[in-house]
Length: 124
Image (cartoon, rainbow, N blue to C red; front, side, top):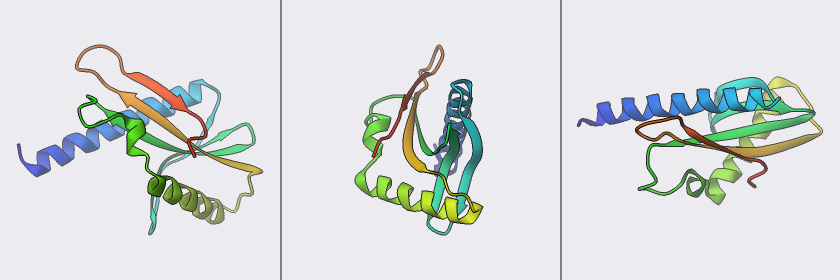
């Protein structure tokens, strides 16, 4: 398998996980504000509103747990970057939420059957 094929497959898997996560969170009452927002410091997968709380959501999608759980991919450095990105998003959009939270949606897509989705609020 070529690197291009692997990259394409990973991108498709990530896009799938983000769609599943956005749908699940919106069904739970959150409002999707932005998707795949980028700046020179990085990217936020999903930005949502949960009541008056601004939620920056990292989505991690896996097909197996061979290389660890989605939760293990969230390092202290990743959390620090997500917090910094949330400040940039707020500045760029001219909003002043009373509270900001970083969440994780872990999506496990097995070879057969529906995806298993876990929403972890306030990961950092």
